[in-house]
Length: 282
Image 1 (tube, rainbow, N blue to C red):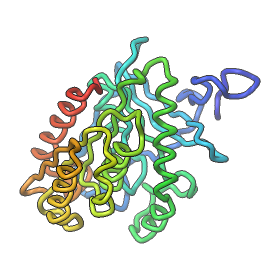
Image 2 (spheres, helix red, strand yellow; image 1 turned 90 degrees about the horizontal axis):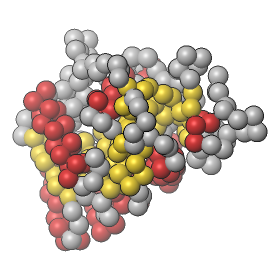
Image 3 (cartoon, rainbow, N blue to C red; image 1 turned 90 degrees about the vertical axis):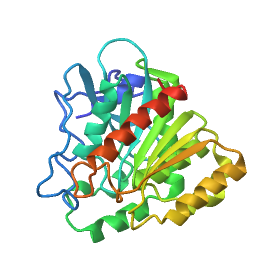
Image 4 (cartoon, rainbow, N blue to C red; image 1 turned 30 degrees about the horizontal axis):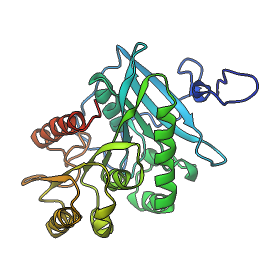
């Protein structure tokens, strides 16, 4: 049930907040069934001391954009990070990343970019069913939803509007790169193994510094693309650092999958925190 705080419609920042006490969750409970490893022991971050909310963000569509939010309790304003999911949507791994960021003092928000399909992606077990849904989410639509999210953050009493970052994983890694190109409210971005080839010609559009985290054993992102992006960024005079982990495959941060590499994931996370803090997202 959507709780509106005012009878004349939802026009105040809090009007699109859902109460966890009265609402059924909008998000899948569990890990993406198409990718979770049988012997996985994923990181689980407690929510004590945090405020967990599910919100609906106005984005000009007939139905607003659902998002999961984790933030520190209290009345202070905090820097914010938009967390962009993999192809599986918002499931327990993405929610946990939000809670990890919240425990570092951030407002973390994970929009459900694929909600228009009406399909619960994490519940699907066949990757062949998931890909067409992802393909329906075109770049203009996704970039528009991201901008709607940063606009929403700027209107919240708990967020600092001049301190917004973006991080994304796999599919979301490419979105993080684009966010540093198309959204002036984004001050820094961290891309985990996002595709680079479609972005090579757009390096000159970067306005915010990007940290890219990649695996040398990634079968879907060749090192030639990594080197090409490094060269493109340098030629454009833009700011981006790309770190390559020699023994890491694609998805090395995903602690619910066989691809997880704990040491590289921890190092990448420490770099993420340093990157955000060095560029005003703190």
